[in-house]
Image (tube, rainbow, N blue to C red):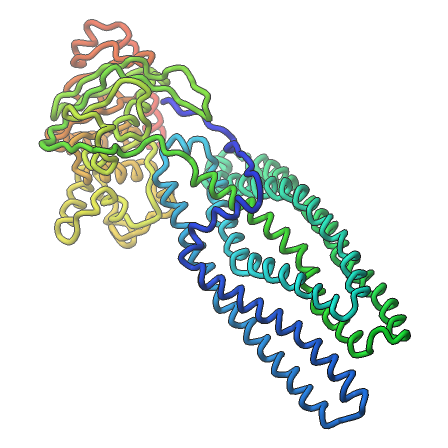
Length: 610
């Protein structure tokens, strides 16, 4: 069996700027843009109300408090109370307006990502770690949601608030405003430097999270192997090493954030101290009233949170930029297996399958490997069952994967009833082709849903009849002994069942699809001899009307075939009946003898276990 090359992780290309990266979210934000803009408007209203309060305080200090007119204190207090209520209402409105759209945007992006992953070819999944895809669909999208609901709104509003606030500060006293402005310059300089440092570390951190998720997933899926070989501690050491690397990266992130926070906290405090000294001197020289000085510091206090928040809002923005880049790395991946612009249909399906000068090589990020299938020719007559035999690594499984277009040929063509499968839509092609692989994969749903996976068009009594027929042929009556019968959930990847049970359900799934062409990759390898014989008897009834190409790793599987094709070094070197090839082909006899040895090993193991 041949397997494609895999890379540890996809290559990445950084985008030119945070703005251009994040701007790509607009296609998802557009349906909800008015609500988000409304949320920004509400947040802006809250900030502007907060900036109005110092004007009331100035009037209160310079007026009623200075003159001793107590009658005016109550109206001033009520005015501040009303402004405070307005501010609270604006803040509540902002939350109400943006929270629901942000979750809807996250959901639409997650659905789009899942749809893209389903559409991308198997070659894409060969290259990408599952943990990397999982982290993009969960943690990255969650980060984008929080930024849309909170980060972008406050970032824009706080920047505008700071600008408006500085203008107001200059109205109280140009000298005080200039001091406060100059004291904030280090914040902006360090903010620009912060982006360069933080973006690199943030990207590394999120990639390491994906690697860590991959390690957990692989260890959970392979827990039986790890326990059987007593290698759990080895994987633990590897996991601890990855976790330590992630911890180091997170510390670098924390240090970068701490650096910007130092200036965000220090600069305002220095500004306050300098402005206090200058303000007291100006008040003593009657260049500013006490009320104006009080209002100045009230305004500066209002600006303190927007200034201090710039640090974590910038870090959130740069994290989001990285998340957006990682998301669109998947969304921008090109699907090399697409439906044709002008698709054809098979009007009268008979199941004639032909491989015409087929070439195939694995390709990985532009690198090409030698041809695994090299000019292969093979023709199957309608209703014919053909066994495909050959030594390990000659390309048998890869050849079967070309029929449903899990991979595309790199040369030549594959046709069904004379139609190139590339001229059919993928849905049309896979309606005619059924597949069962040696490594049976089941989903964490009921037995019924797993078997009828390829027949969404049937329901009711017809579905029940089809289900029972497929289970009967695959000798899968064991399902009736499960706790809930055919409605029993089989658990993740079907690991609650034995290997033979999983294989029989996978075979039943292929049979239930009722295809015109059936490709089977050694579907009986996990079955005992008696069960295999009963399955073969049922398969003969099904295969009598279906064109079938079966990879045979056991001599008994060869007995199902009308003819046998011998594959050697990526080519078909002989085709004939089993007896013809045994009489005329030395390599075929060698391959069959190796299959006999494998069968003897299986029989001996079964006898030892009996």
